[in-house]
Amino acid sequence: MNKEYASSWERVKATIFHLFPHHFLSRCTYWITRQRGFWVASLIRSFIKFFKVDLSDAEIDQVEGYTTFNQFFTRNLKDGTRPIDDDNDVISSPCDGRISQFGAIDNRQMIQAKGKYYSLNDFFTSACSHTEKFIDGQFMTIYLSPRDYHRVHMACDARLLEMVYVPGRLFSVAPYAPKAIEKVFAKNERVVSIFEVEGGYMAATMVGAVNVAAIDMAWHGMVTPPHMNLTARYDYQNEDITLNKGDEMGTFNMGSTVVLCFSKGCYSPLAALATELGLKMGETIGHNSEQAAANAAAKATPEVVAEDKVESEVEIETIEEVTTSAEVETEVEVEEQTSAPVDYVTTPANDSDTADSNKP
Image (tube, rainbow, N blue to C red):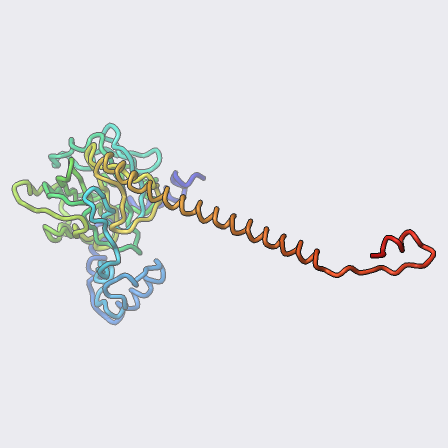
């Protein structure tokens, strides 16, 4: 079966998840992951082994350094482990993860999975005052797996305009879920943050999921829990909250998904992007305009040409060396043949013709 579509088992899992008490399970997770005890280190080791977590880039790279599971899950990185391009034209990945989908926002619709869509209006809700800004823009969905670094950073320099908390379910957002659960990102609890950026607007939405026990935002603190039943909007337009590219924006207390949206004309995706592509926080994912993308490509072209020229020159030199070497070897062989002593063949006396031909 085509892996882009949900299998029978994936549809069964999705059906089962509809019956789960999502918020109750998440409250239990919230409590358990903040407990201290002798068992914490064993739990962390088992988690690392099962999900193949790499602690080498973590600020605390020894299991014994963590007092709770949540401290481990929301671990900080060592300085310099995620380099960020300081070029203002570059848009960087806000987190570690894998690209689930990306592309144009077509007629207010975003791709959730092959053949499945959800709308800007459903995703941002009527509480968001900037929804119209993103019509015909671009989007990217990044899935954070359990093994990933779970802090979310700014993709570019920006000024915060508003934040909207949207209550909802906590379905799994594992790779099978977008294929099997209709409009899962528009159904799940989420926090939408709207920013003004160079040339337009950016929305960075942190989508909750089962076991995502809390979402923290840098300028607000913990948004959830408590899990509210009503949408809440926070207006920051009259406040000067400015964040630089790479600044921490928020934290998932257990993992989930980030959806980036850009208004038309302020994001040009990198040509090398593809679904299922793994990303690291700070990695370049595009530029803030088509012109900036073209300029970046033009800058890279001479380097490629120069490299090709050097390789060609090396090849020519190699060919010349081989040719010269072959000529020298030929000359040596000729000299050896010329200077070599002549062997005389002794034949029977009655074979006079052959004998004569062997005389000097």
